[in-house]
Image (cartoon, helix red, strand yellow):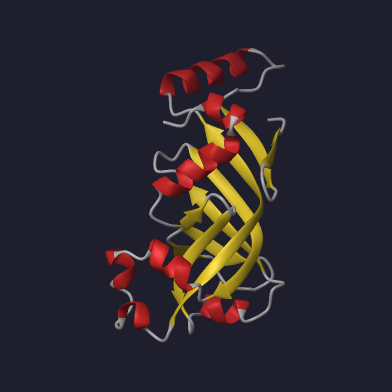
Length: 180
């Protein structure tokens, strides 16, 4: 269950923990007309970068190409469905051997006929600029209580979650709470 206190006090670390808990999220590009696609994230917390294994001839890798100006969007839904985030940043195609070695595992290996020597093996690096986060209560009792209160008072809205914005810098994150 998502901690609303943690979402208020340390949304960056909570976001990173949620990314580590999921098997896949939806990765897309801001300016390219194609549907986002499921991709398994590999998070580098120190550099605020999410790495994805892919092949050089996929639609996504080809759309990014060799340019450095493409912007990516990665959407996360927490395992308990009470956490949602949309992350954005610059995305590039990079064959970073150190990252390939760091994140390589048997699941990744299943996709590449020649293992780490596969000529089509490459990675996408999403360097995060910012993230919008929505954390909601997983408690049906709290949810019901908040809905009932709001229905009995015209001036009250249900308080069932936290919305936060995280801006990633080189060494730290600026965290702001947005109004409901």
